Image (cartoon, rainbow, N blue to C red):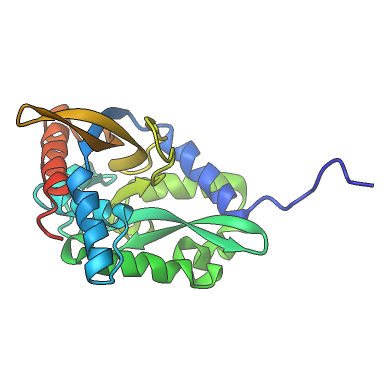
Amino acid sequence: MIPKYTIKPFPPIRRATIDLLEASSQKHIIHGLIEVDVTYTREKLRKIRRELNKEISLSSYVIYCVAKAVESDPSIQAYRDRHNQLYLFNEVDISTPIERFNNDGVTIVPIIIRAANQKTPFDIHNEIETARNQPATEVGVQSTMRFYLLLPGFVKRLFFRFMDRHPIQMKKMGGTVMVSCLNMFGAGVGWGVPVASHTLNLTLGGIVVKPQLVKEKLENHEFLCLTVSVDHDLVDGAPMTRLITRFKKILEKADDL
């Protein structure tokens, strides 16, 4: 007889995620939904794979572009401490979730690309792939998860409130920028609107093919749907717009590949 249902343990990492989202829901987040032409970029990535036998995923290159765009204006990733002072970091530490497959199915584990603005796209791609193949207990926040889960619920919520006003610890534990939900919708139009946890958050959506007028001729181009979210308590619309402009220019031209 086939059982009507299956019982599985609730993943510990999800319990931490719930606590983080609960704390993040108090932030005043504004979102910008944009499209970025990645036609030329994806062509260059395929050429690198074909001619150099090297791999750089689009998501890895997006992380690289975000880091370079933020490097020009560190205030876009600032944190505020309990004395109302802003901490502007020169290093861009990007937190990003990765999928890992094990006997229990798929596990989402956040990792942090430290000083991503000082690394090449190859470095970032290789770091992510290395993390995918590590034991889950050694990846990202999983290494400290066991102690965290022993804490009572109200203590865990206080922990995230504490972190939100201690920039050095926040950078150490969570990075300074979040890039998440990579290609979450696959092919076709689709944007994700996150419960943002960082001052700056980017959520990658789907890729859609649309006609584009180039030199008076219509050509099919690939556009990446992307959501830029910032904490409006710390970042105004004008710096956000300038960041988007810098980011799009770097990603669309792909001069660093």
